[in-house]
Image 1 (spheres, rainbow, N blue to C red):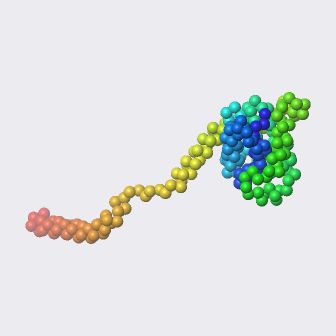
Image 2 (image 1 turned 120 degrees about the vertical axis):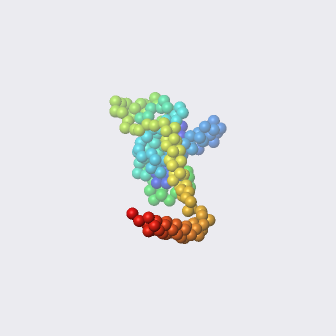
Length: 224
């Protein structure tokens, strides 16, 4: 059964439409969480973290199926037992309807879920796909029945883990690196070094001259 649908832009991850706007407690309590997950998927697509044009993402007892076509992302949440082939038929149907709208208008939308005109269209299609045993839906399932869908499948937990690692690496790369500690790193030590280095050179030179003079004196006193 189709539970939730979100349509958004792939360029910036802005959600445009969502189909039925559930208001009762039964739907709103658990669908709000999955709606956030759908928005997360939309953002990941816009960031290039999800590159596949078609994908199934497993989460709990449900599956997100998404389709990216001409810069628009179509996402549907279904029960895990719902036929995946039928879910993508549904996405293709609403994608074809979306194509009828002016692309210039779509590009000007700035507020999330403000394309309310498309909500009713999504609702109409979702009702057609509720019962998988209708003649129309059975016909769609039987077409190319032996042909497997070329769709990548992955668990939501893996996607979330990759995002966590990516965010951690980004924070580490943005953290200023502390310079290695050095004796010359202290301004006070630099002043001391500047003051005593010439004195040490003079002392060493004096000792060297004294040693040389003693050697020469020994040579004169005890000729070989």
